[in-house]
Image (cartoon, rainbow, N blue to C red):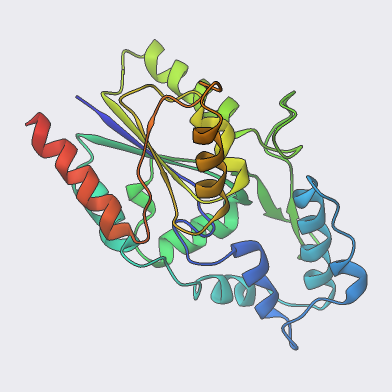
Amino acid sequence: MKILMVFDFDHTVVDDNSDTWVVRCLPDRKLPESVKNSYRKGHWTEFMGRVMNYIGEQEVSPDKIRNVMETIPFTAGMTDLLTFILENKSTIDCIVISDSNTMFIDWILRAAGLHTAVDHVFTNPAKFNELGCMEVRCYHSHDCNRCPINLCKKKVLELYLSEKSDKGVEYEQIFYVGDGGNDLCPTSCLRGHDVVMPRRGYTLERLLAKLDEQEEDASLRAKVIVWSSGTEILQELKAVINNVH
């Protein structure tokens, strides 16, 4: 009997956006208008490439960037939740699907001693180039017209589940925890006994409520449970584990 926890990262595991938090490593903590205004909808990763390039040009060292990223706050109750997952690895698999990048997420989880709670992170690959600038690449390409150009979370989740199934792992229950518009697409591949957990007051909660109103759209089968803190998610998770054992 296995449970799969799927987390978004920004405004879910951490209580801010890691991509905007990084700007704090600049001497005056802000981007010039020319960089700020270069964002095009659906092309966030390209925009972050320009942000990291600008930070590199200001000769901000990789260590300074890392130190700043390690100060991002976790959402209330999340470290307890991830610690519980870490202590129950025989029962719980845990993955992160995020539009952030590999370096930010790795740094933040390691600094908190929680990187081993997460079995796999699916996000945009990042590395420092020879000039000391961080380069961020798109995670994959896809043909989903609902998702940003670089990442369809549904495609990632479906592929993960089919690879696990090939290895003989079937999940008793899947919890999908997120907050944003790009977390809606993957909820359509959840089953009736799975749970989607949107963060209270964020975009995903509104989008799911809208789906509920259009009852003829049966793309959402999973149960919806709204959360405000990791503690509430932990209660749901413990309840499921206790019911089974």
